[in-house]
Length: 607
Ligand code: G6P
Image (cartoon, rainbow, N blue to C red; front, side, top):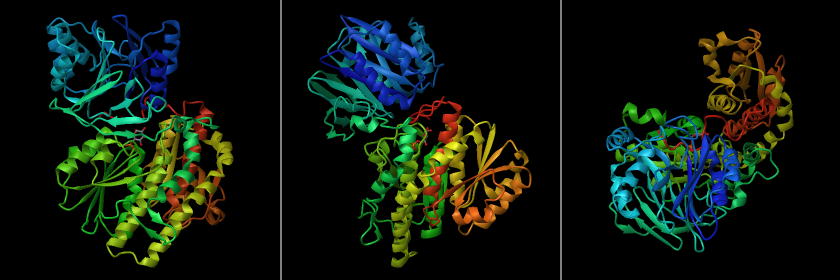
């Protein structure tokens, strides 16, 4: 969470820093700030709230200079006020930080005992003081940073500017991502390649423990032992256009509508349409010996994992444990030797998931990662990398990454089933045929956009909403509820339809809309019975099903949404669309900030 950027440039940097922050605002938007170095002074401008407030501040009080750093914040320590906004500075040093300094309390107390005065409640400010102490004692910027980094515990990506050195910036990373961008007579630091997209595509990804000294025309990278090292410079491929809204009103809307394309794009790396076979990108990877899978993820990615549990067990007959990442490590899970640990993440940087991955690696598990950012920490630490090709996802609420994750997981389940001898070649062809149909089915689902927009007013006034589903559509009910909570701030719960009678049914009255996900198939009748239990108590149903399902059970519903008739395997992909659209249109009707909902951040790089 939090985005950082630094530019050591030929021309003025303030506007370009702000532009970089705009591309990273999805990482957090509690406050923003810039600091430039000009004529031996640190020029700092900060504002609480969205970036627009910083833009106003800079219009009133410009920050001239050709070297600078900037930050967009998702608050962890200290309220989202201006005084807690980054950059944090002393007379000599200004810095921006993404992560958490876990030992900041003892460091702060020791600094206060040595007479340092703090102006914020943040963990970050200790780092500014520690480096400043060294500089004030006559150390060079490099010596100062080298002395301070070993004192810090926790996670950090840092960009540091020095009052007396307008010719350099220093960056460092441990646990939070940081990249170096190479320009023409300019050099950059950023939390990700996206932030630097309009500036350069030539990117080096720093490794854990690396720190870097950048000047206008040079980069020196050091590892955690302070040994100078080389890191590959790659072409990022992220263009500035990938992060524009185009004709859409919101990024989330654009990303919902991109799903047919990006799911097709993703599937093309996992199936051979002509042969009608499944093929993983790392063909030589041996999954034959895998007899247990542990899935770990957070948020929407966790729900993709829940759907996959049904698939792995049904098709491959491999038992699956699944946990949210924040719980996983701390319950000291029993991991069988020879197990596969599967991590699912859009960003590949979520701190809880990354920590769980490292825990499993240390326990000798084979690490598989389904991830959307191919250069992320998780991607780089995987044994088996299973990329999704959703492209940059900017809306904080995940949409297209989810359906691409499902596409990869369905292919993986089929592949595993084949390797385990649980799937015949004919059944494989059948599965591939259904997967190939997914993009068209997603298109058909999107065709109901206007209709869903028109029914948003039925849900928008509700205080509580229930989502019900069974089998692999139960995680979809959870995802639907999460989407609604995230962007419309309506309290929503997802429930396994059969479990409703054990509690939530007590909530039912005419003020609680109940969204029922019920594709035709083996579980349809059972779900419909549960739906009738709701109706009998005056509950207002929105039934999402196909034409057959609606004909059979649609009567008496407050509203219905018709989906194309699809095989149960791809139903979770297709039924993701109406729950996303419903949440989207309800949020629009309520006038909330769809792409940047309050209190959330897209990439959560703290525990
Ligand atoms: C945050 C985002 C969610 C996302 C979750 C996991 O909470 O707001 O949309 O599902 O993190 O992120 P990941 O990048 O690991 O999939």
